[in-house]
Every structure is written in C-alpha cells, then in structure tokens.
Amino acid sequence: MRKIIISGCCGHMGRVVADICNNDSDVEIAAGIDLLAQPMEGFPVFSTPAACDTEADAVIDFSHPAALGPLLDFCTARKLPIVLATTGYSEDQLRQIDEAAKAIPVFRSANMSLGINVLVDLIRRAAALLGEDFDVEIEERHHRRKLDAPSGTALMLADAAAKALPYEPEYVYDRHGVRKPRDRREIGVSSLRGGTIVGDHTVVFAGRDEVIELSHHAASREVFAVGAVKAAKFLAGVDAPGLYDMSHLIGGEKGK
Figure (tube, helix red, strand yellow):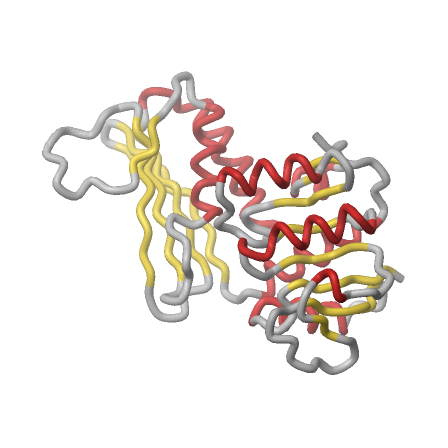
C-alpha cells in the first residue's frame, strides 16, 4: 500500500483527491499539508511542509504556486517523489522544478486527465499532417473562480501543436484593438470564465473551406484527482530522479 501526503488537502481538489484515496485499497493518506490546517477525518493536517513529520511514499500537490518553494525543499530533503498538479507557475518556478528533478522524481502535468493527454497526441498528429495550410486556434473555458488565464492546459495544447508545425508560431492571447489580418504563423489562445465550468478545451484547425475541431469536456474535477492518484502510485515505484508526465504513466517511458 502506498502512503500519500496531500498538499492543499483543505481545498476543493484536495478533498476530491482524499475521497479518491479513501476508495482505493492500494492507497493510504499519511497526512495533509494546508495553510488553513483544518482538521480532516482520518489523517493529520500540518500548516507547513516543514511541520510534517509523517512517513510517506509520495506527495500530491493541488495547492497554489506560492507553496512551491517550501514543498520542493521538503520533498528533496526527504527524498520524496512529488506529483505537481498545480498550474500557473512562473518561469523562475519552472526552473526550480527542473532543479528539484535532478534530485527526486517529479511528475508534472498541466492537466491530469487521461482524455486531455490523448488529445495532446491527436493535436500533434493533426498539426504535423495539416502543416501551414490550416490556422490553429485554441479556446478554453473554466469556472469563474479560476485564477490563471490562459489555462495551463491550453498552453500545453498550444505547445503540442507548435512542436509539430513546420514553422515557429507566435502565441496571441488578445486581438483587441489590433486592426490587421491574422498572421498565418499565429496560434490564437482565448479564455472564457464563468459559472461552474470544470474545464472545456477546443483546438480548431481552420483551412480553406473546411474546419477540424478537437475537443475535450471535463464533467467533474474527479477526472483530475483520479489521474493524480494514478501518477502518485506510479511515481512511488520510480527510483530515478527526473521529470515525468502523463506520457511516462501511459506509455512506460523513462523520465527526462
């Protein structure tokens, strides 16, 4: 049985992860870490990573980018693998993650759902086949409380297309006030925020007289929690430091 520490356990996603773990006979919640430190049923909760003295096999983080530094310090000191399911990291924080991955296994994905990661593969194939003959546009929709825009998933989808295109595209996030035709080498990324939308992403390949759309709809946050728990169980069995993502979980590839 794998023992898991949940960072951000008092938040909405942390509670969903806890529910998934409680219904998984292969997983036990060893502890939680959350600034609020609200009592949770079945496991102790610590207000900071430094205060956590519980043994575990891996950490799942669904907290906030501001919590990254102390959490990485905690994991590297304890040689604990970590699943980073939080989005909105700065460039400096991404460098911190790369540095930590030299010492411990780090699993990071902008989206933990299996469906989105299949979509990434489909986008790569479509972009490689369609090339310069189709314009690429991405629309993402999320609930009104989401902090970052565009979503980390939208950027992940844009990167998937960009790597397969025969040119280096420019990401365009806002065309307000720009009075000129769309450049053929753009990837447009637009965001919608409203209501309780869990997460919808559509990638549009628009060509001459035809349009191809690839979409993913998340009906609940549970799909992300399920993926994160699977990633934690996978990472708990990994010995080598490195950066891991859904391609390694699905295909059994080695870390970067």
